[in-house]
Image: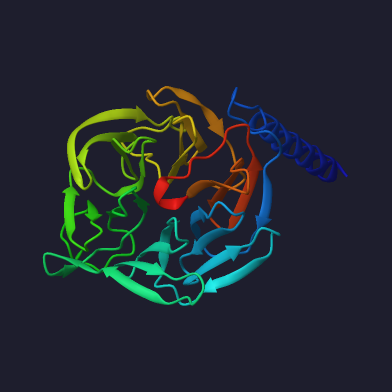
Length: 313
């Protein structure tokens, strides 16, 4: 009987801890949100990544080990958009509705959303295949910044180093930076004068001045991610990120989605039941934050509104 009582007490304490955790997670960041509860939309997936919205209420996201790109339409229905996908990771849409994706099989690709025709845009640099392209952002000229770390890459890495690249509208590919281990998430500032790169192997996020499309100037430290209690060392980096209409940056980390203002000031953390991998704004009003987190897709209403780049309007 005593064992049963102890079991009930332990279960009660665990339940209170769980409730307390999500009560804390629901506390909104002033002017940001959340403006409601975190909702789990879909689960039992492999490893979700790369959410991207088209501005019409549709959302695309990837499941890397399942080798699929999924689509959630404006009515909330889930379907398989592309299979096999080439183990795609980050995706983004341009103004014409074409889907661009980082295939971890070594290519940067585009996909016609109507015909689902896949076109290889870049598959090598200096005569060698890319390691495993990870995430991307499209600028207003149609150029694409993308990262190429080592995750899921052949061993030894084909490129021999991890880097950030730019694919110009004419197809030319330039290596822009190879000064940090595991460059992962990448996004532009609202005016496209700055490029933000978050590595996965260090807690710092970096900001590069853009002198011209595909040409980076000096870099500076933009922010340091808040680390889990007791964490030591230089690790604890981020994964994916997005930006809202006021230039605030949302970075996925082990603690949740960390929000920073345009000066690098830390505003708060939005917590999720699973560790988030990537994040974007979507919905017809761009006020729903979608988060891919391990085996699931989550959504939460926000006070903030997401930003659509001219190339994805």
